[in-house]
Amino acid sequence: SCTEPIEACKVTNPEVCGRYTACASLYGESIDQFEQSVTVPRPSVDLTQLCSPELLATAEGFNKCEEVCSLSACCHLPIEECRVLNADVCDTYTPCMPIYNHKTFADFSGAVEIPMAPGGLA
Image (cartoon, rainbow, N blue to C red; front, side):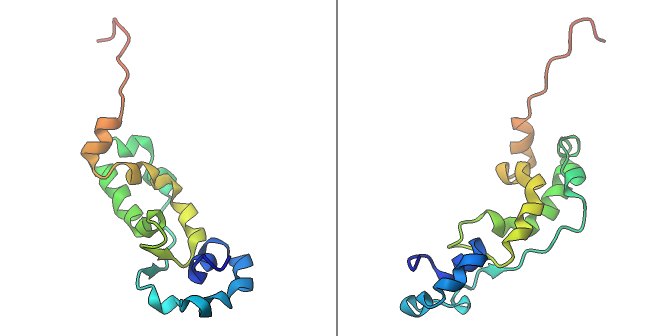
């Protein structure tokens, strides 16, 4: 609809938004007014492996995953704060969700529940 910024429409629903391009003149919106528009790079590593629970359980593994996942930070901000110009790439960063939910390794490691070992193990 014409109440949605045209650039937001281009990101969230590119197939349909062409019909609403004329609305931009009503609201004076253009891509130039959004300084926080970014193109998210495709991950250069296998995030499923890099951000696996086993590796996230270590500070080093958490930090490596966090470093790569930081490239997609804009994917998880409200569109008013940061617009991703290639939103389809955000889906490739799904393995980063544990990082997005816990800002630091201390937060993450505190959220991990380690089951008690059965009795009789030494």
